Structure formats: C-alpha cells, structure tokens
Image (cartoon, rainbow, N blue to C red; front, top):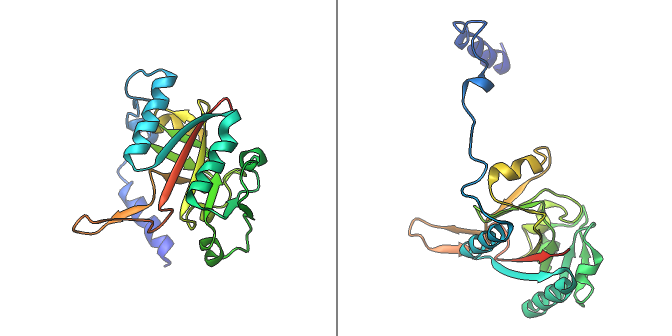
Length: 215
C-alpha cells in the first residue's frame, strides 16, 4: 500500500459516519467576514496605508504622475545607485530622469549578479491599507520574485487610488492564487531571542514606496 492510499484510507474511515445529506463543509462554517474595519474615504484609506507603511519602517513618498520620474531619480541619486534592475514591463518614463545603468530582469541572472546591483524599481499588484502590505504578483512591471529579494534597495510604485484597498478581504479577489505572490510589510527584518532587530536578511534592507496619483 502506498502512502497516498494509506492517507486516503484514513480520510475515508474518518468520514464513514458522516451522513450523505450532511451540510457541505464550505457551507457549514459561516464566512460572513467584515470586508473592512470602519468606513473610510479614499483619502483616509491612502493616509492609513502611508501610516502603516511608515510604521513598518518603509519610507513613503507622494507625488503625481508628472513628478514620478523626478522622484525616482532623486531616490536613486540619494542612494548613490549606479545600477538598477528593471522589470520587462516597467514604464520607461518612470526612469527617464535617472542616469543609473539599467539591468534587465533575465532568467539567467544569478543571485551573485543581482547582489551587485544597487537598486530595483517595480510596480505592484495591490496595496493593503489596514496591514501596510504591498503585494507583488510577478506581472511585467514587477518582474521575477528574486529581483525584489536580492538587491538591497527596492523602490515600489503604488498607483493611487486604483491599487489601494482597505483590507485583505478586498485584496484577495484582485489576486490570482496561481501566480507567485509576494506579500511585503516593510523592509526585510528579523530578530533573535533577545529581540535584536536585523534588517536585510531575506530581502531588501531599504524599502521606499512611492504613492503616485494621476498615473
């Protein structure tokens, strides 16, 4: 008997006393969850997102579509970034004002090559205000997961208000569970038993989020 057959046999025995007309599992448990906590306006939702991102030690910037390229160039210059990873579908206009060398997101790039790149600029799939979370799904403007995990500096652009939702229940219908989802709440960080915080262990040490309106 295979392990699969053994497990399925245990499941069948456990269900042996369940009547055929029993309430299906997906209907037996109430799932009337709140879709959000409170009743916020669009502006209040965006403000909450910015507040919670900052609480997670992300650096938040605000601009409009016309000023986006200048903001990104300024952040790269302030960082001293000479190179930046660029996802294949990133709007070229976002990097129009920077002289940093573009490094394409290539399948053959190794982690050592990516570690030598100074920064990465991406878009996002959705941003969740109540949790201060940004979700990436590997879309063309976000690229492969590893380009947002290996470089030490990540600039993530969030379109306001189109990509901002209040809560996780509102975000889930926007996401495809078959895609490589990365949920980011602030820069990478961990702590030991003495609660000494260390940043940049399994992701970028610095996360800068640009909330752009009119884009």
